[in-house]
Image (cartoon, rainbow, N blue to C red; front, side, top):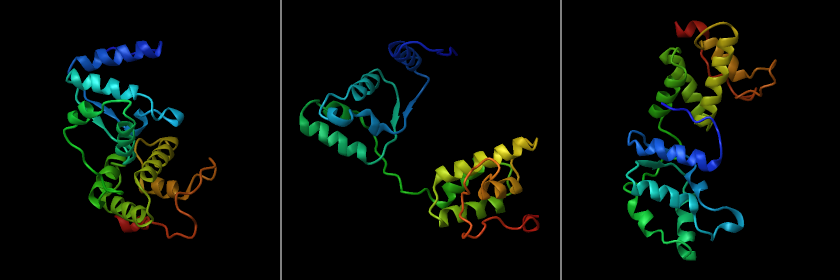
Length: 195
């Protein structure tokens, strides 16, 4: 595998197209609604979408992940008649609407992948508390990163229940704000409750 070490945007685009042409990669674009022109350029041709369309024409598998705003922006571009979006729209094979929050089981699967060293009971308790508070995957990720950093600083390779408990409370010495406010109950069961 070659690594792109820099250069102009055109060189980067050429490198990406070379990698995609191999047919062994799927291009996944998150925040796809940002592919539309912004600001005063909303009525301009969507050059990024044109590039995506050109890759679809070459047989590159592409996944676009976006907010519902994507469809609104697509309708606005079509209404402005600045770009014929029909061919692009016809290339969309499947559109899935995702729930506002992942299911409890999906949330736990993500948590288990981020904190694989935690006992299942602790993971379920953390996930239930975060979900009850309306916290999403972003908060879970922040929690996992903090817990892993705490473990690393202590010379451990994996986060423990104690590290997660400390991460929930915030790293006061590092200036992190707590993930849970002091008024909220602590979500971690006592150490001896996990044995």
